[in-house]
Amino acid sequence: MKRALVLSLFVVLMAAFMGSAQEFKGEWDSVLKLNITDPALPTVGFYSFLDTQYVVSGFTLEAATIVTELGLVNVWFEGYGSIGAFSMWSLVGFDPTTPEFVNFENAVEVSIAGVDIYGLFGILPVDMSDPADGVNDGFGTGFALGGIGTAGDIRIGVEVTSNLYPNLWFVMLYGLNGAVSDWTYTYCTSDIWYADWQVGALAAIQTSCDTVFSYLTAVVEFPICCADIFAMAEFSCTGFDFLSFLAKNIDIGIPWLNIYELGITYTVDAKVIDFTFKVVTGDVVCFKPYWTIVTDDGGITLDGITLNALTLSCDVGGCKIFWGHIFDFDQMRYTGWMWPTNPSLTGPYMDDYRFDAVGGGLTRLHVANCAFSVLDGEDRYYPNEVFGFQCDEDSCCGGLFSFSVNNFFTTNLIVLGVDLTGPHVTSTTLTDHAVGIFGWMGSYVELTAGIGSNISVVGGLKVTALNKVEFITMGFELAW
Image 1 (cartoon, rainbow, N blue to C red):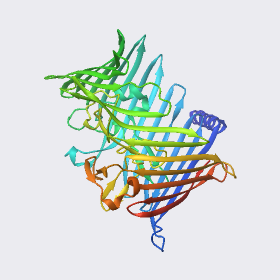
Image 2: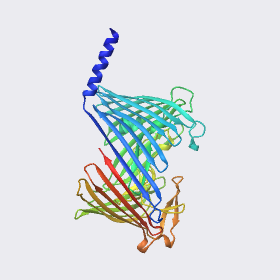
Image 3: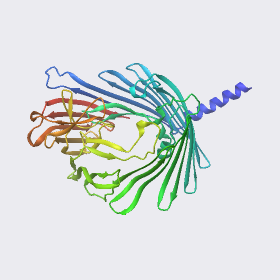
């Protein structure tokens, strides 16, 4: 009888699953790079990304692979979605080049009477000997249980972890996805692509204690006077770590200036006050400035304001014209993070900005390396000025036809070279043969044509003053 009831329940659930709304979708992007300076047209690069998704009743099952000239380099599987009051997410990743298992992460959240209760579980790589050597010594298992509730204008969160760094602050800021890894790929242009997985705090396993308990954190958000305050307390298996208070976007009575973040942190043997100024600009029609406040005496004295970069973008006759100039490659990047235990997640800090190969916008070099550059042996050079245009029209066969030309320059023959083994920035002087007239470093041309409602072909050409015509690219983008 029990077996019959179980079988009947299984049949009902399968019928409900099969009868629900379902959708199969995905994308396939492939690009081939050829060296046209060699009569044999050797392949100097290949990239193919295949992503398939099966969506049923608001839940998505996803599988993705990346193939380059080195072969199969990335494979991962994801499942995420919501069923009623429950939200779930799971990911497992593999590195086929080793080959080895990379990580297995899971998160679940349920909302009950205005309270969000979440749990995290992961099997993750861990460095148990020397965290600075970047070598994983094996895998470990970590857990976290937390809850976030609201009472009037006050929001309260509490979390306890075992073999995981605290995740509560990220969950309060960004939701459940703030605590988990985001595996994705970056396809900048037909010239530049790379595989990337952005690992969240869940990937950092804490192993300094021999107890099951690792961290207890609590965060309270509450209004006081004219500001919203965050208060965060952290306790580890060794005792009290810190108590922090954080206020954001503080109006100090100057219309064009505010304090982006003001934080006070108490530890057992110290008190630290940290704050960051930000220039407040009004609505700019077509020019976009990038500012940094210059301070001295521990930030108390304002020495001035640095205009790091200025970009222009406007539409003329159905085309977008853009220009940009970087005056200082160091641009302050603001963060919304408090003081997490994991030292790799501290902020704010100085970041390096470069120009996109297409579009003329600024990109953060160490996060999304979609920037135009010229390679001279082991030295890589970046321009500090760009001028170009992009025109879009309907193609003859459906889809969109896009044509863009981007010209890159440098001033005073000085650019910043970046050590490819790390984020260390060094100043390098370009030789005369590396640039052309008016300081021209190179140009990039790209054409994309839709040949159907869901498929496009793409081609690109890169020319530099140093290397002349470097290569051409060709490929396609298919979505269904």
